[in-house]
Amino acid sequence: MTDTPIVEFRNLGKEFSGTRVLRGVDLKFERGEVHGLLGENGAGKSTLIKILTGVYSHSEGDILVEGKPVTISSPMDAHKLGLGAVYQDAELIGSFTVAQNVVLGGEPGRFTLNRKAIRDQGARILKEIGLTLDPDRVASSLSAAEAQLVILATLFQRKYKLIVLDEPTARLSASEAELLFRLIRRFQEEGITIIYISHRLGEIRQLCDRITILRGGRVSATLAGADITEERVTELMVDRTKNELEVFNPGLARPENMLQVAELSCEHLAPLSFEVRAGEVLGLTGPVGGGMELVARAVAGLVPHHGEVKIAGQKADISTPNKALTAGIALIPEDRRKQALFPNMSAADNIALPVLSRLSHGGYITERAKFVYADQVMKRLQVKPPTPAKAIKFFSGGNQQKAVIGKWMSAKCRVYIFVEPTSGVDVGAIRDIYEIMLGLARDGAAVILVSSSMREIMALAENVIVIRDGKAIYRAPKAKCTHDQLLGISMTGRVA
Image 1 (cartoon, rainbow, N blue to C red):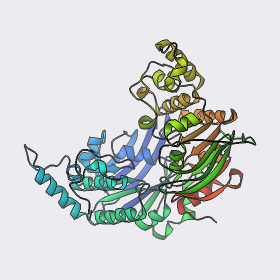
Image 2 (cartoon, helix red, strand yellow; image 1 turned 60 degrees about the horizontal axis):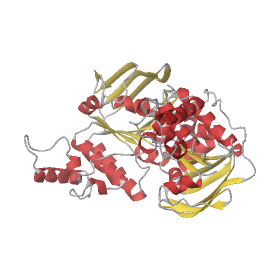
Image 3 (cartoon, helix red, strand yellow; image 1 turned 90 degrees about the vertical axis):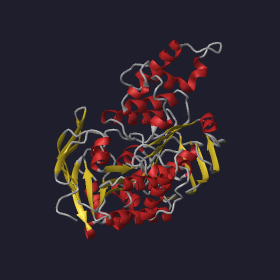
Image 4 (tube, rainbow, N blue to C red; image 1 turned 120 degrees about the horizontal axis):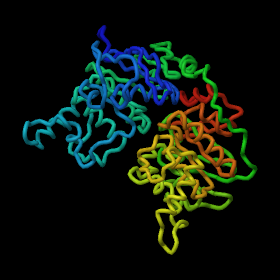
């Protein structure tokens, strides 16, 4: 490693609408190192990476690349500086081949595209970094793991100096993860710096030269070698000075079961049984990609599965999303923009979608009926601005989430599944969303909270199941759990 860091942050800060999410961040990333970045949800990891890759601009402080101050105002600025990221939902051009994706933007030839030259260059890059993928394979046929590896090959081809990997093994099998680790070591040999974001402490200790822990928008500590222990990492991640969330579940569960799940299983999820009483909030937690999300998708009918589900004692058909909804199950997914909203349609169109038949008269639905209905929902949930005619894409993340919840509340479901409900949500809306969730429980619904935030789980759930590597490894009433205990089990898989 050289004396000059590849990237350095000096007194970096970021503010959103008066709320400081990063403050006084001083951090160096050395050339050719694997640097782990850890922190609880809301600690500032995503914001820091989005500043580095040009998605956000910073509010204060300086960014230096190879010792020189730079301005990163857009992803293109980051690209020109050789800074990039690979996210869990890595996207390729599906109709292109692997080779075409790898060399995209750096195709050989000045005026015309030479398909053979593109194919040969792509194949050479794949061989150089040790990937055995067929360069002629169409990208749409790749698995999520293979797509991630092709994105890495693309960044290698573009001679990136620093690459961020965000929970890269969340969707990978053990053999695929090992291939990724070999690729990371190959990149290190080329002097490429890797920022590795993960909640899996075993991976962190195996791969990382150093780790930095963020807490409350600040650098809590940077550790190396033998100092990276479960006890030390947990101690540094948990913000002891931060008040617990003001919203707290007082215990709303009723005696009767609303949801009974028996031997539910699907690909990458071992058989799992559980019950959720009317008024209960069940917390499912664990590392991202460890299986908790699969439970939500299976119960909502999104993936092929085995097992039996009963709602209020009656067997329910959840073989498809529509049948699950008919049975009374609503899913509020993490990626609301892709999975729960039509961004170019109005708030009224989105909110009224599940109840159009109720709003119709003689088979005809008036705009006024939709707008009146949506206005009532928006006022009830304090969606701001309360403008039903406005396209939903122009609302903030928190208000979009409220609109999604309002849409399914109108369908009067009996089971509500929330997946990372405050992901990408503005700080001011988090309390509102929690209150809405507890309101559903008070009304007698069964609520499943799928969240990697232990603070969120401890505030809202009455019972907790930790899922890791596709298996339920721990379950207990929330009263018998502690924040640090759940965090340790999630990161290491060890139950004391």
